[in-house]
Image 1 (spheres, rainbow, N blue to C red):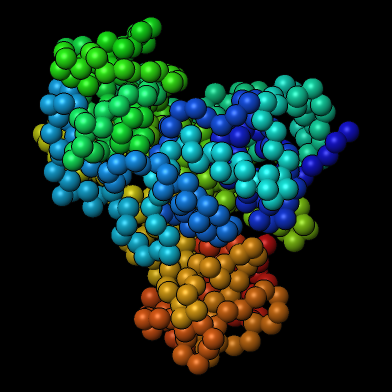
Image 2 (cartoon, helix red, strand yellow; image 1 turned 180 degrees about the vertical axis):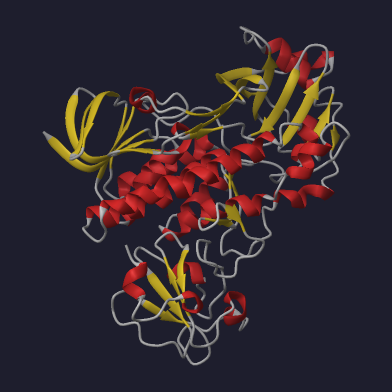
Length: 493
């Protein structure tokens, strides 16, 4: 019987990211995806700064940004409009867009507009190039888990694995088979997502956008840009059943009777709704849930795929340490308590952005209560704290938070010093921590001088201080809170 360390079920953004993170940590895997190819729908479009940082860590940031550069044929990502239809729509005043918090936290990476239909293939290509066993057109048909491992049938072949990672989407068959329940909220809206080829270049020239809300007697919904010229997603709201032939609604969303002569080619379609589901368990023995299999909610804010990718970034280093004998299996118990509260926060915040204007921080009498409860995207994606199940206002090296980015004189970021194992970032006068983990000294008189000379001030430590940082770039311990050469081992798994 064939054998692997980790069986990944699901070849979407989360499953493919998990494969790449496992490769980074030197862990073998088999990825099984029942689809024969990548998603044909754009779906997730925004790759948040934190996610790009994760791709940077494993050396694929440039590849991702390169394919992203092919996405938009005209106009930059951003901007929003609303009105009776696209032609008559008006641009929103986005002075309140700072609530999105997309660029408030210092980072060596940049936000990336890369629709899922473009991103999935490049992730799959890189995984294969690096020797990964990636199998599209291969379905999981049965599995059983014991305290010692998992046996699965994929594509008619039996396979043994140490662990099973379920990244099989919102209708996760693995979650269902295990009977894992969850926290749920009913949907507020139902949509038919229709991805089309329609040349709207003339209409949107000088008025490109990310999202346009439309509402008239025929259609209610949104138009989402994929390339701001001839590829668009029409999200058409419906009550009971989706329209069989949505062309009438699409033309009504564009507007103006004379626009019926625009050739609209439907490329793909699917239905979705805004229900919330967060699994009560992220782990059942040797089986782990991640991405939409663990949490699902409306896409407002772009937290879905980005949260799922962060899930597997958190999990894979822990799996690697256990599989390599560097940690006991108890380390895996930290996955759920760290990631589930983060998913609940994202789901709550997405729900608060249900109103289109509220999504952009524009307050009205109808949405004022929801807007008042919104927190900025940086708090959710970048400044979340595993130590408090909440977030911090500023990253200063607090235990449980992502390490602050500081530019170094060699062109690197402090984040680039992290991984694949634990590391210590120490001041020039810090004591000798031995050779248990790599030590990088930062500051005057060392090889890694911080460009602005503010590293010590940023983390609130003197020249003899130090931080212990986990493989996922989160701070594990500080010298002003117990970390010393003598106590180092107690902070390691």
